[in-house]
Length: 364
Image (cartoon, rainbow, N blue to C red):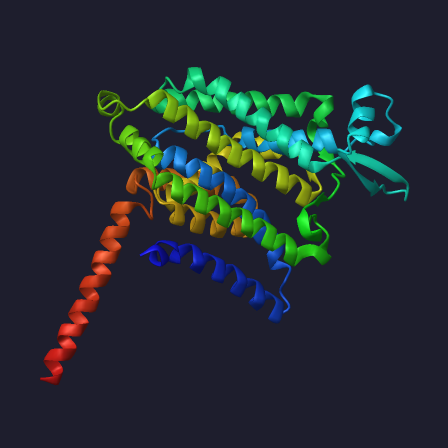
């Protein structure tokens, strides 16, 4: 029984390995670059799926949390602390919170460790999500969507117009993110395979965490809120706390994705905070199925990969906007939503039964 529960995760891990092996055998490892980026974007989508599909809360501002992660690590890790006389820079060096690197001129430099910037980014994002979540999660429906949209616009304008964040140019030359065991998050083509597995590991870990969450008491509370917040309140569920909890968790997912993708790309720009990024995330959650983590993951990988490979060309935003409209009109539960899946599996079962009965009849 326990093995059956973990079978889909094992299948996902096997698919990840098989795909990498195939690309290596065919000499197409360059596909892994876009797949790595798509995997990081899928972390945002997984967090948003739990928020929208299970708690019934709409967020149009998750690109802002993604950008907070990317920009926080960019601001903290790019300065050379070895030449700084700031007391905090000296303290970081004395405490061993820095890493050595070589700049473009071949000179030795010292950056703040990306592990420290990751911790700061997560705490900052969780704090901001907590503070704005308290008032805006009292809103419902399109009012909540408009409030989160406003938050996303504020963050976008800040990163676009502030010199600290590089304004329209963003921030580049982020140092590699050294992990345990000699692994490094970096855009170096020679590290393409290991970066693919690092991103895939984060996605699998995120899936396991969220699958256990929705299968727990918290998940049942979230589903009750999605069904009827008033009824959940009447049953003694602390709806305000659970909504805030899942909002902060989904923001942290976006933040972690932003940190890792910024180090993988070696930079971050204001386009990551654009409103259309948030619309894209919502569209993928909608097409994948509002309460279907596996559907959201599948659609997230496919659509992000196609977008990153440039299959949609200059119509990228038009495609995702159109997808969102079509899904909302004809498949409000998502293309791979629970009811649609039941209909599809039911039709497949009837087809199989019909063929089986026909075969038996022919034999007799």
